[in-house]
Image (tube, rainbow over all chains, first blue to last red):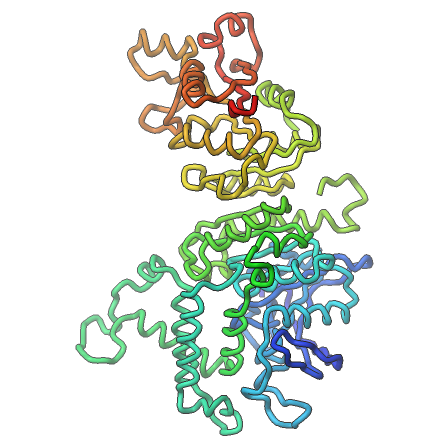
Length: 387
Length: 205
């Protein structure tokens, strides 16, 4: 474990008994949120950051679980001396409602029936997530987030935060996101869902009761998803047309390295990561539904007009899932409101995945902006300050 | 903070307090930061270079990473969004200065432009006597490897303004030492090294 790691961490749980009115009209009478925190909340309680996770992410963002050699999913960016410096900030991340890593979701037991929710877990949306994260904020006695930060689906939650709770968020860092999904994005999600739902082991979502897992569907969904995270260039460079056995066999077994890689990713997701198939469906649905401007005549600028946070928007050149143009839509809407916004387009060959990976320019932009967030903390305001 | 160049001092004199400003090719944000601190301006910088971009963010500025050759600033901003659009030493490096000027004049009520004067006597003598493209401390690059793809003289620029019906509100020249000498006042197109123009659309007068 390196010196700039936050070391061992452990998840916590918050049981909420206040019902959550959801966007779909459903009501979740009680629920549980799994979350982790790193660093210390300062006396003024103004150094808290909320990290929002992406589709297959969870609340284990950084550090290590005892006995696990793999760190949290954003360990590169969170820790002492890293862009999100745990010496300065109190970092919070919760598992999204409907997830499968500790928060209430399809794989947990419905307290009203005593049975596993399965497909009966209500459809969640970005707005619902943000509402539940706001309950966690209150529980942790945080008046206002110094910043809410997220990539991809996490970035969409950041946007939602800035719209729904403008006075509770000082800075919004939106990374590799979009103001809504395109038809192509939705189409990819639909193919992934079909793959899961058509798996004979899916049992209409009641696979847990049948003591089985729709592994084939999950693996296919993941293979497809994974494809959209990579760039053509990067795949060409990493795999090219390299053959696994050095020669063509003229059959349907794995012949090209890229096939082998994709199958491995699918396998790993479906078997080792224990990702719940119903959660995958829910998360992709939440992505599809995300479109905050739809409540404002599809005018994103009007939607963001009440946001008072300062924004940093970041995109990656080879990301085609949520391409730079999609981030620029957000930037444009913020500029229309004369909002404080900075925008960086990071050169990377890693496609959508780039937001999770080490990259010098990305780290510099991130660190430079986080220094501004830090400069706005009351503990830093004793001297002169321009921000 | 290092001393402000005469070029930036002149620009500061033209900008009005509390103005809304867009700085195209803002670099590390030195000018924008100065205007923010001295004139309480608000606004944005645009810069393509990632290293300079980071510096501008560090300087506490709103900076949009953008390629002026590809993006149309009118896609980002509505007509008359800014009191001033400033572009220092970048006109000669963009692919179509004339089209960028159009964008600037539509988005900004006034524009402040600075560029190196190719008509300076040193450039003229180097070309005239040496028979070669000028290369000196102000234009240090070789002709085949230079960002300055559209060098022009004061006269060229003013001809462009005339053909595009751009009104020149005021102009000024400085030299390498960022001073204004007698010769520069007498024959700016011979002695001025850096041209500063304050322009706007003609129909506004």
